[in-house]
Image (cartoon, rainbow, N blue to C red; front, side, top):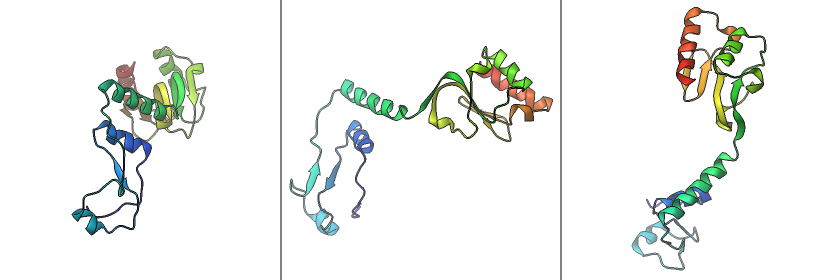
Length: 165
């Protein structure tokens, strides 16, 4: 632990450490010898310290909530619709049947072929194109609707959809 780091803490890292009760500090200058640092106790001239403040639990929770909101504001809202990460296919009977089952229509769908589900929020379901049919939270990975032809794949898809809706 005698290595000096040249990377300062980000505001998020500093806030998280403070939230956990750890007071972050950093050396003011990098030209100090790490061996000498172990033997001498840091004083006010050597260390830039965040003043320890006794925050109430409510203040900590409010700060954490503000951080979460700031992180989430960078995400795009889908307004509780279905995000389809595939080419637009309005004529797919399977997709139409799934939307009827979920009490949705094509107007409730947002087609974004190269979308990353992590960039979006407030969705009912995300359909990503993949080889095998699987579900991770609200992200369904399956072949495109017009590519699903076998009865076994359709059965597996419907079983997953019954769990979601």
